[in-house]
Image 1 (tube, one colour):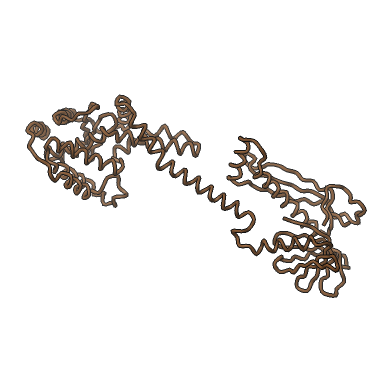
Image 2 (cartoon, one colour):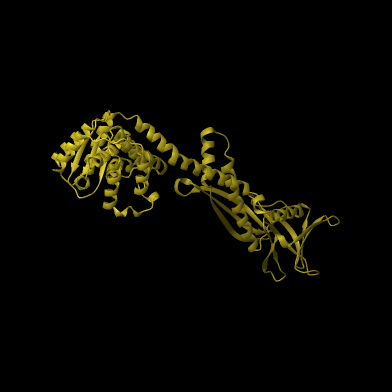
Length: 354
Length: 105
């Protein structure tokens, strides 16, 4: 905002008047004048320090600042200076333009809020919905692709795999999936499920298993991951968020690598804790329906804990619920369980241990 | 201070020419203004948001021009010309160049 005027400037009261050009800005005014010796000067006056009034008798605006005086024709200058002085005095939120800022800030917050909502709630929800509609056949193909992408280093222990498949078949779990258990020779104490029915158990974990209820607990836990499409859901969720990020930042190249990246994650069992708990609880139900001792879960957890002391991480940082908590809710849920020895499973298990 | 696009002022002959002066103002419309203007582009109509940015850039350039003239002891600027350009990647910023002759009337 700027206005310009012509005026008569008195450098001090009683000094010779000089013609001047006056520029009034939003916070200051500047007076350009030439002294008798021909030199150019510019005086700068902060607007909050000047007194401006309209002199009716002179029909002129009179502006004073530290003993200097300025006369400008008409009353427009007085009005404009007054207006600018008012603006300076206003608190920041009432100043011109601050409304724009408030609106922009609100818009930004809404935009960010919307994106956060979309990323953390809507995209995962949609992805899970899509995952639930994937057919068993497609899941199986997806699972094979993931399994191949893993490139497991260890060789398969076919004999053990055969016995484990027999064991699982003997559990008589009704499912739409054709569950295939594969035992891989490796010294990692772990097991995981890939989409479509494949369960991978590492030989090191198998060695630690001491009873058939423990093996039943492991298989029923992993089976629940398969049956509840946990892997497929987490692959879809991740794919969803990658697509979203890709759309937002315009990079799609990374989307294709999701499958391969995810292979590693499944290996290290990074389902969410919610899914793990679901697998525990539903797996336990399978055990209880078959009157298998729920202590199998406890033993399994203990063996896993011994093998992975790194789970000293606080629960919220880990992918699995805290072992003690898992044992606690398993105990709670299996209070009234009836236990009967299953000779058939026991025999198969003993075959494995021979 | 008299600022005009004409080369002379009626009834006030030029007493002294103080030289050609210029001033520029480069201003970026923020991302929100771009969004609003983008909507205008889709739905049609005048884009007040961009107009305000342009107005601001023009004012800033003229203000700087006037200050430069004043520092030279001028009380007028003749033949003022305003040039508008877009610069920056994708023409996202506006540049206004004001040129004129500082004079003493």
